[in-house]
Length: 120
Image 1: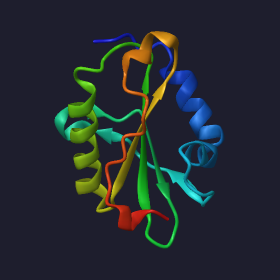
Image 2 (image 1 turned 90 degrees about the vertical axis):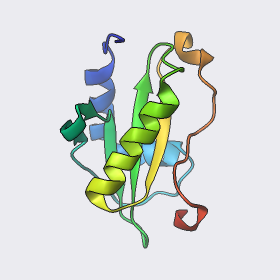
Image 3 (image 1 turned 180 degrees about the vertical axis):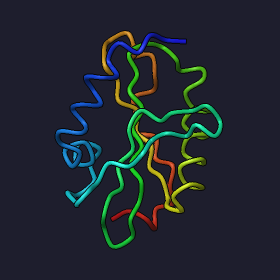
Image 4 (image 1 turned 30 degrees about the horizontal axis):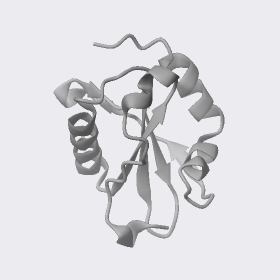
C-alpha cells in the first residue's frame, strides 16, 4: 500500500476551502459541506467527500494520488462511489487529484461517475 504522506495536508486544504475544489473540477460554485468519508463497513475510506448543495444535490468524491496506483484506481473509485451512493442516496462524482509528477502515469482526465442529468 502506498504511503499516505500527503493525506493530512491535502485534507486540511479541502476543509479550508471545500467550494474551491468543486470549482477546480469545473463545476459552478455552490454551497458545499464536508461529510463523513468513512466507508468502514468494508474497510474502505474515501480521501475526502463533499456534499454539493444545488437543486439536485450530489456528492463530490476526491481521491488524492501521489504515486502510481493506476492499476487499482478504477476499481477503487468504482467501489467507493457505489458505497457512498448507497450510504447517502445521492449521485457521486469522483475526481482524482494528482499530487506530484510521479502520479502522472494516471490518465489525466476527470473520472465522472454520474449521469449527465445531475450536472448542476
